[in-house]
Image (cartoon, one colour):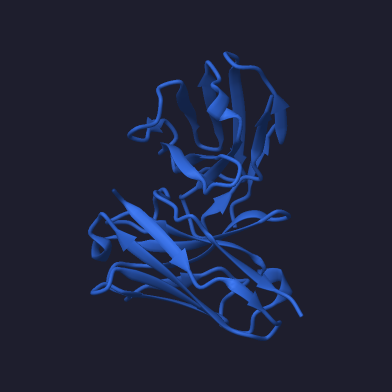
Length: 106
Length: 121
C-alpha cells in the first residue's frame, strides 16, 4: 500500500494567515493526489483534485501543487471556517490511502 | 443537489452483523463507482470497499475481505455494505462516497454524513 505522510500534524494560525500543508507519498503517484477539509462534526469535503484542480464551489484561497511524491496545499488568507482538519489522499493505486491529517487551530 | 444519506449503523456485539444503506439522489447513480470509507479517532480515514457501476467489479480492503460485502441497487439508487463477523476494531463512522464515472481511480465527492457503527459487548 502507498503510505501518505502529512506534515505538520497540527499548526496554530490566525485569520488572514497563509498556511501551507505538505503531503508526501511513499512512491510516485503522478498527480493522483486529492485534498479534503473536515470541519468538526462533519464529513470530509473535496477541495482539490488531481493535485492542483480546484473543486467547483471551493474558494480560490485554496490551491494545490506538486507531482510525483511531494505535494502542497496552500490556504491564502485563512478564514474562520478553515479551522479544521485537512487530509490528502492518493488515488493512484488500490487501496486508496489517506494522510494522517493536519489540524489547523487558532 | 447531489446527496448521499447513510443509515443502518448502531451497536452490535462482536461476531454480529449489520447492513448499512446509502440512499443517493441528485445524480445518475448508475453511472458512478461508489465507495465506503470509515473513520476512527485512532486510525483516521481508511478506505473499505468499492463497486463499479454495474456491480461487475468489487474490491475490498484486506482488513474486511471475506467479512464485508458491497452491493448496489441501481433501480433504487441505493448502495449497501453487509458487514458480518464484526470485530471491535470495525468500530468507526462509515461514510458512503461517490467516486468517478469512467475510472476506479479518482477523487471522492461528495461524502454522506456518516453512520456510526459500534462493536462492543
